[in-house]
Length: 232
Image (tube, rainbow, N blue to C red; front, side, top):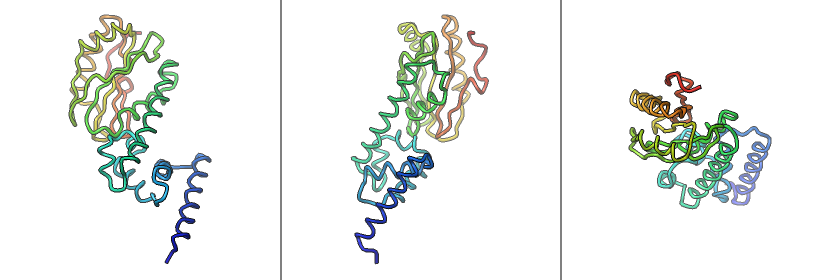
């Protein structure tokens, strides 16, 4: 039988190896999640719990973005740990948003995609956001436009157009999520995208893209050629 002292020593050695792997840039996502858990739950072996969470949510982005009630529904995750995850999530979201505030979004599209994943990955209902950009494609405002159900969220074209004019936005990115992983744009998504694009174009406002977060995948209407000829 392993004594409590010996078990503690084994856990300490394992956590030291996790930290070294992370600092050496060799840590896969599920082990990053385990390393986070060691700080939130310092006196338990969290290997099984980290794998359970990673399997359920599919990515570390989705774990961090999951609602409090979803996280605390997992055995072994209490309010303190869930709050720790939400704190990391918020700090990361603010870091990515600061990048979008300071430079044109296409200068680092990976940062934009990561911001979208952090913002919407793991949500269990659809949310629709609008990113209002200035003439240099820097972020003016990211606004939650609507919250819907597991497979639908309302889009009000007139409200978006009015808000764009109020903010003097010259470019817009539509953003929403599908809670079911790996589900691309629906026919309704495409229609409303083109309807908004048409309304904006009349006012010389460019719809830069419509991004869709589904699991750990980001779909781009622009890259999928779902937008018609836009403003140059």
